[in-house]
Image: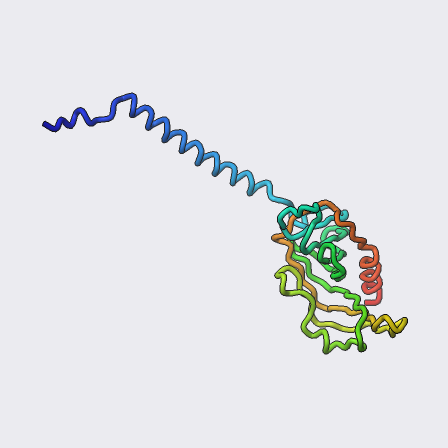
Length: 199
């Protein structure tokens, strides 16, 4: 005959189950606490940084060579919100100078690009598509050609300096890295300062 009393859990089994439940609750609580700590320990915004030179790059898997890959912004913060720097693709020739003001992790202002080795003199119509945009981080629009230089030899093309009157950079998803790869920002700073002086 079926005896329901014999199927009740013993006090020892009950204690084991309660202990397992407490352990699971403890793990869940620790995970919640870790997430809360991670939220409070996130990197500062660009606006919160003291004046200095910094670099932020898009997150990427470690490369076997140890090189930083992807898009980066190397910049100097001056004062509370002013910033000048260079947006570039690591280990490539692709770069553009950016200057403006920051709010949280957003930079807005103007940009200067240097064009090289064009077969014909570039025109503003050639540049109406703007610079960037596909990566989702940086976009420069409204180009104005400041200077066009003739080829210096038969092996070189036309070069030009282009001002983009509207530039926006979103660094929310970028992370701070060390200042490698080395990428000089002096030429960018000089170009942006001269542009600022010229109004």
